[in-house]
Length: 323
Image (cartoon, rainbow, N blue to C red; front, side, top):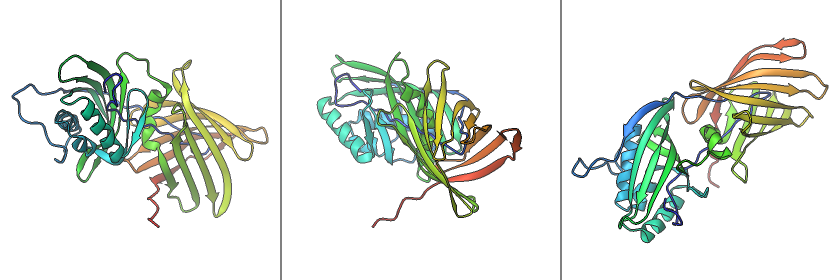
């Protein structure tokens, strides 16, 4: 929000995945959307509790709740486990933390006004949209002003569209490694393969410095324990591309380059096996909402031989029942 203030509105989502010897990346098409603060005298903005039928309305609801000075209404626009990151890189997780943060901000800056303009909106899946835009926050007396760029990930649930993450950056600031990885945030969490013969489970989380995505996964094939793999995904400033490094428990290792193509993540992967053989593959991840995606393995080569293609549905693990 404001320089040296308690916080600024921003939510960050980032994520990653690792699957066998390859991984993937999404590219989405930008569709310009004109969404700005209505002029004085226009129809009232929707309240935070109203059902948001279109992603563009989420921006209007956020501005309306903020400009009412209602921390609770702003927090209600977010998923229960959403993340909000201020422009200093501080991450605030969950509605309760978001509400506490904003309540402190409104006490320090009563009457502060938010204007948010959405510059582009892109659909990653029927129930997931990513918005990029600008935010301007001005104190009531007009003496202090902050301008930032923002990126938001919105998810459509039964009650309408809601914020999963919202990221804020000072205007004209070079994107950080974390910013470059933010589009992969939908992969954060715990996942499992639905294939009855191959049980693949993996989890994805941020590194402590928030500049890498860390993936741990292990597999069981027909009941037998397979290899465990550790993966670190980061931003390569020389190639200007997402780059991942993979290390297997059997001594094998590999790396991959991520590229966005339409609504799918594409990853070109190479690997070295413990016996010295080399391999390569193309992995495609096709998201189908917030909790499911299809994993495909194509053009797989090991040594001088070609391996068959595969595809496997991957779903998010349900939460553990309360003790």
